[in-house]
Image 1: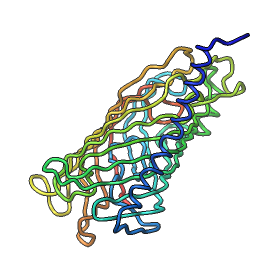
Image 2: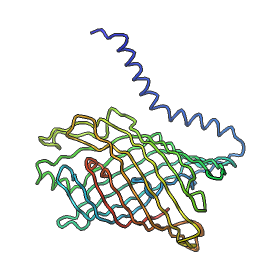
Image 3: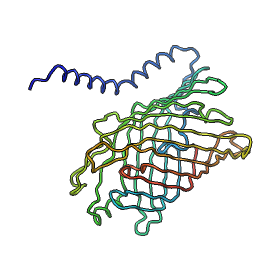
Image 4: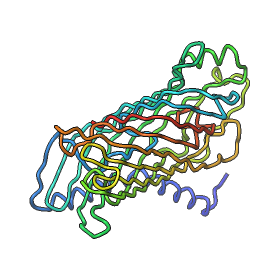
Length: 346
């Protein structure tokens, strides 16, 4: 069959778009490095932690160390009926520093974010199963410029050209599901993505009452591959379809107080809210999935020990979440949960 010139042009255009999507961030790195390396007064440090562009407390999956205990209501539980559980989430992570560069006007850093996120049902009557484990790692670049405007004190940003996430539902859940539920299935949620983010008034840099705003986007590096794959021996007679949509946009607001009403030298109130538009997986539907706005709210206090000075060490928060179930395969459902969250700052 002979393809028309129009069809050939379409193929060339799509190939060009895919190529540029994969190379755009890498080209940004080279361009930015050329600009900053030409500036005088740069100080270079290896394996030095940055202060700017840290995860906000309300970021749904980050490198913050977070222990949550609360009540959860989920309308989908790996293909089964509604569930009400007391769940424990344990988020462990760290931004491994590689390079830190500073000059009087600008600072930037290259680091490796690594994190794991476990969801556990500690009071379930039979096996107290681990419900899901998520694993993330990648390469990130962040920078900050001091503005000293009366309203905007600084602007920081993050570029992650490559990151990987893989998720796995727990063994007890999988075994029990295959043995007792003919509708149970397992998919392999695993994908590579990139992320872009911008922050006004970075809260970690400013030692004063601060209202911060952040906006970001996450997209799949291979959009045609989707978020997950599956195997015939793990889906039984169920007909499943690949994901059609991809990408997440999110915005975060954070308000912290270091002085004034409801504060003292050791206790600083903080409110952090994230709105994130996520794809709700729909394994049995061949059409495009729905998009759902998810809200994640943290209200509490950060504790600053006297001996450390102005560096916070522990956060005590009430947490409320409603939206797409965050863990891996369970993103085909909607969940609501609330409870107590302990943040350990490193």
